[in-house]
Image (cartoon, rainbow over all chains, first blue to last red; front, side, top):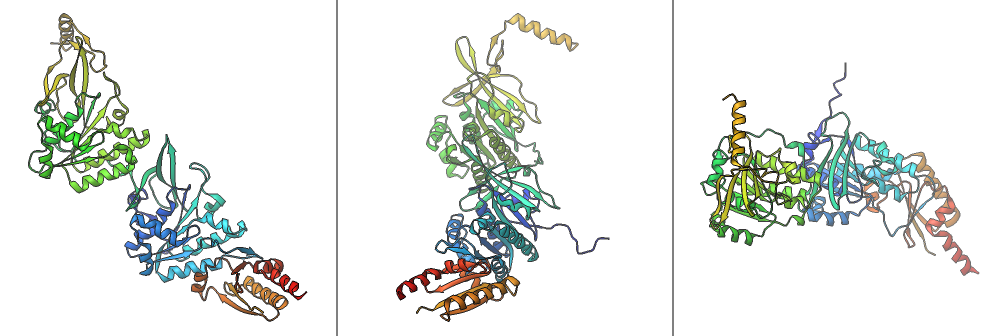
Length: 507
Length: 100
């Protein structure tokens, strides 16, 4: 029989947004964890945030620094809103300053150990009743002393001592490659029970930060790399994609698209908690459809949040009033909020977090994004896919109807990458297509997909004028619109084909 | 003549600590002939002093006076390096030259 002293690995909630999800509850409690990453991968921020969140929960923290001076760290972390100086003066945080002292030459005359360091850590842990310890970074110790074997042995002794003190410790270590050896100096050998890797990969001229839990000995964690971002005023925010479970409730409530005929085509309007993708070439009326959707929020308790990535606020408002829709009044009534951002100003992860925050704050019933393809510009394929999944599942989870527009690269027909990523996630897809007929450009709209509802299968012609979009009758006598090569079909041919199917159906 | 103020930080009563203390006593007796003040601090008993001085390794010898402040780590078994680290050899040289 096992003794009762042996218990399963407990987890300590770190408080770092998203980390609990990725780690299934937090860091293994009372153990040491190696946090490895290249230069600039936010190891120090993560290590400090781990302590700050603990201090917010009433758990004291000790920061052992081998690299930067405590003064430097304190001033650097102010931008995240963490007043470390105050935490130190309140006796909740203690620094053990083991950073190199530039004015002091160190001569080695005989054998030594790091006994003083261990004594200082133990002393600091006792002084602030620490439950969490961060050591930043292990590699920097090696640069202070010439005897690598001694330092390695002493660091091992430190890891053992930390375990004995029953603190949960995070030890950072630097690595030289994003996908190479775990850490320099072989430090992973003695803190290998738990390993987290932070990456900062340059992909197609864009930086992409990810966190991966390589192993947690004896306990569970999510596998793979999870994107994260570092936000001023907040610190590290991890975006857990697996959080986006497919457990959205399904609503049968319908809301208007802002266009009566389109509502009819969709079988009575969009579902309350669905995602609709509007795809079309440039100038075919996507923004108009978005505008109509926004102004559909006239009803009681209906509020719309519009994320515009292509046009400025003024442009949007002017366009809307050109179609007889008054955005200004809607905004004054609190029915509308317009957020205009250039896609280039931040990374996609930051966009996602910002959008989520705006949605949480405004609590809209409908969200419009114009356009997704503008965001695609600033990202790589992988992070775009993650973004689309992240934002759509978040919107659905809130039981909001979301309308996303997407520009196709070609004028006639064709699909864009956006659609590849999003089409399986969206509940409905509306296609707006140019149709070249008899020497003129006409426009066609069709409901390609409408999950859980009957819908008009026809491709209908529409026109845009000062009143907005007018959807007319189905195109007749023409085929191949979606492929971008419309072909006229003569009347007898249509009749012949019609009768062909009738025969097959046994009519 | 300037008096030397030396502080030796050690961890408990380990063989290495004892060796460091013995070596320092020997060096002081041989090289400094009574012109020194020596303090031994056990970091296990006074961790705050180690914190204030930012001591990492033990034994660490700190020469507080005369300036400049110097540090030597290790059990001080390499006398030449200790003298070099404390800047004592240079001082002895200067005294010799002055005497001539």
